[in-house]
Image 1 (cartoon, rainbow, N blue to C red):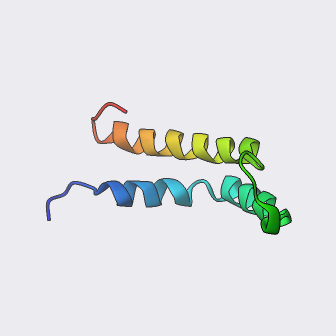
Image 2: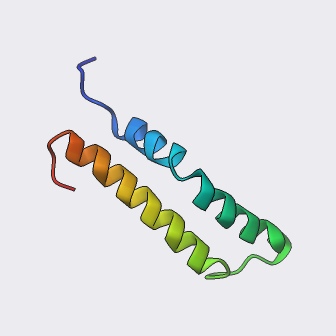
Length: 67
């Protein structure tokens, strides 16, 4: 394998740096997991998604590729 990082490895690195956001989202879902509905935790999900995107883009940019 070359020195290039696989996309799943980049995602794993990004996910590891978003544990606080993941915890908040998980607690929101867990609070009423028997009645999960669309957009129930949309605010928490968007914060988690934004964290992932920032982290993944920073990893991609560090590899000299546009995000």
